[in-house]
Amino acid sequence: MPRRATRRFLPRKTKHRILKGVIYVRASFRNTIVTVTDTRGQAVSWSSAGACGFKGTKRRSPFAAQTAAANVVDTLVNQGLLKEAEVMISGPGPGRDTALRAIAQSGIQLSYVRDVTPMPHNGCRPPKRRRV
Image (cartoon, rainbow, N blue to C red; front, top):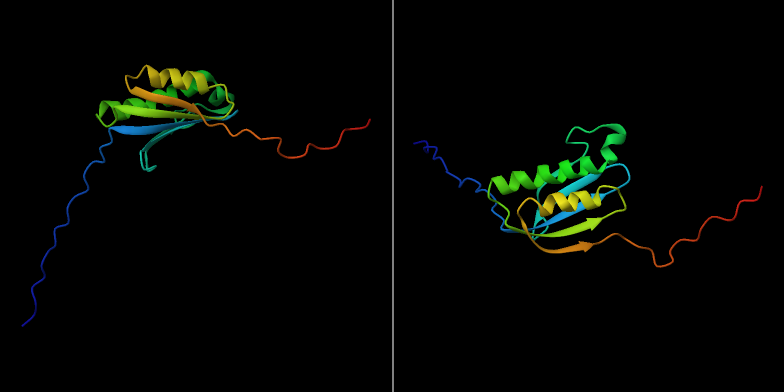
């Protein structure tokens, strides 16, 4: 007698609810990328100035960085997924301050803001002096 096929009902994935997260702002000279992760480091949401529709030299503007930061944070706040966050800012770009202002105005409680831009401790040897 053949066996009956039994269906196995697997539990659905629940919405990943994070109350505390880490917001990484990477501000380069050409673009600004904002990533929100949980405390374990798994990315929950991200946005960039290029993904928000800015092209060419407008991507490097502070307004584009503000739009990218507001875009990623507002989606999480509206869903009720993020209440408290730490902010890590990296890079020398022009959008780093305005991205931080946009995050602060979104209503998320910031526990701390840290600048994690890599700085050389007298690193690589510079190229030799040019003789003309």
